[in-house]
Length: 435
Ligand code: NAP
Ligand code: HSE
Image (cartoon, rainbow, N blue to C red; front, side):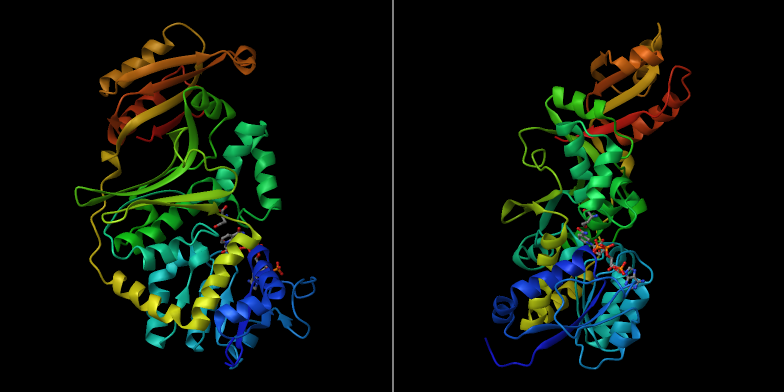
């Protein structure tokens, strides 16, 4: 360890992630100081409710609800911004940068929404922003893409990027727990966002995919530019039928170079069981990156939770203390100057599909459905109708159709016609099948 002065930091937010950072600093102080070359010392903590007990904090740390105490403290060089959501976190970030402070954050909603502007502001102020914890929790994917893999032209990313939805899909199939119960469990374990809607509707994974796409492909893209679908309409039956057919359903995020254009999607996808992505269970994430020189490299591990996420924040803190952040941040800024790649139209996505329809259990229904698919040039590979106790009780049939390869555009046209069929009951599900 050197004799450098301690690095004074502030924690903004002391929930799952903030308390994890304090816990690592409390239990590993000497080892962290040795790796950082100086002591990392929490000087102030800002929360919503200053009266709650805050474990792992050294005596004398000021806990406040007033952000100005951090902004106006000249001894605080680095702020760990660990409050979720866009507002008020966005305003806080601007105040910290204006006050000449560097920042690390785990907030992907904020980096997705205002990252470009905040990076520019940081550059103008001569400051840095680290955000390793914003994508894939404890997996060091930001440093992989911005440092270790920079000798490559990235060809594709295939990933599970939301721990909560992967936890739900795993527990529903393996333990037959209901969707609602598993979601509550994910919240209790600290995996889910304060508002879990973004975890289960695909938004969180899509925001993380956009952040990775900016870094890996130097391409700026917005959520509305690509297909985004969550797990919130899936039924246990979908997971079971897919399992019978040799697949697991995973919320798959994909970015792939296709004839010079970027194909992007976030969708629950049927993936053959023997693939590592299909075997990624619980709150784990996985990112498979294909580079033109390195080939395929795969990173997997905890995608959410207190210590795994704090591990990523700690890496940012130590990188800052050692001076590495200053170098990496400059290269991220240079990469953002590159021209964006064109985005492939969602209609051109070409895959096989799984289609589950809840329909009246009566003659001619199958004929009506296959007529719509046939007229839209969608070829059927197999049809399956399982009898379930619910079907017998409510007179419904659950029909599962696997198709041959077709494109999203044809299916969107077919969806519109299918929705008008009188035999259809409730929500249908259409999922792609990974190659
Ligand atoms: P959390 O458990 O809900 O904690 C949020 C913390 O922020 C709490 O301490 C809360 O104070 C404080 N806070 C909320 N609003 C505030 C405000 N207006 N001013 C000051 N403090 C405020 O959230 P988390 O799970 O730690 O997540 C924090 C960030 O990390 C989010 O952006 C999340 O997306 C990201 N992240 C989380 C995980 C994970 O596994 N949880 C993983 C990766 C990234 P009180 O304690 O007084 O309520
Ligand atoms: N809510 C997020 C998830 C936390 O479940 O993946 C990690 O970003």
